[in-house]
Image (cartoon, rainbow over all chains, first blue to last red; front, side):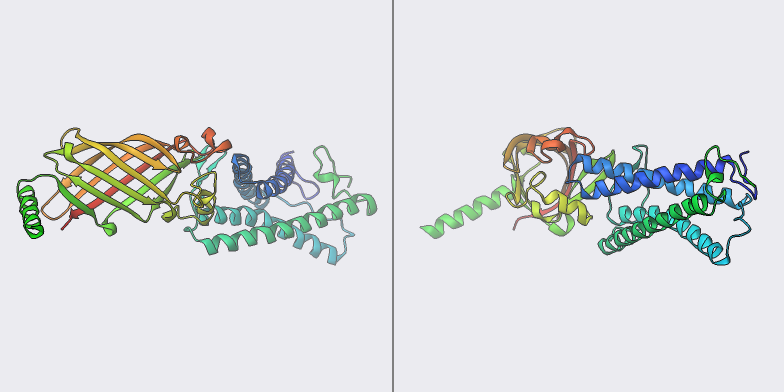
Length: 184
Length: 187
């Protein structure tokens, strides 16, 4: 069961979901530490990890969106009110936008600040904008605002999943769990 | 008496110039550049010194009589990145609050093949003096001369990048320095 059905998520979609969940939380920790660490080789290494994982996330989200396009999407329980359907759709769109925009704004910061960088110490990342202090500052602020928005969306996401599971007693959470089966 | 001496000296220097003896050269700043390349994570991190000066007494036919003096305004460095510039100003790197100038002064210049010479001398950087060798190519036409070359410096010898930065990871210990200096005869 690698592919999705209209009732449940397949193995590939689950793998994407939980890998990215882990990577995003790792990014929160790494990004916070890298920014607050005093200037030292350790700070640079924290940034190298943060940037490398960011590029990995950008690659994964691209594959994930393509996979989503060529697969069915499990439907919400029939009893779900219209406002919840809109809210669910909007928050998922927001999450995907953040998952793309976070790495892209980070990439712009790195390019505009003209910092040499090898992804996972492996290959050099080309610059996507010319060196420019103002652009670097703007991209940094965008990166931070997006982080706040993503953190808020994740709170909504987790709270909604818990509500589906514990209060509404639907399978919306369990059908995304590694061994979860749909109850319907 | 004084006038006689001056005239005598003038004639003497004319005789020297005519005979192709040691000549004095001055740098043309607009056509000269002094660049360096650090290495971060194996990737080049280039920079330049926008202000420096070269004074040279040099005759390719008699290099032994030569002297090369290069002074560098360290404060004029630019790596094209506000963040890198800010970091490199600090005490662990250039320490621009204490050291604003670097200087190279040759002790001798020797030929090293066609159009090639090596200037041996002392580099003073960040309060440290070390002997270094600066190989260069020399090209001269009637009006100008250029000297160009490249050296590799161990930055830790001069205390550039101290403490944890001295390990060479992620910022390499070796720094390349490139120069291309255009000169005209001092009138």
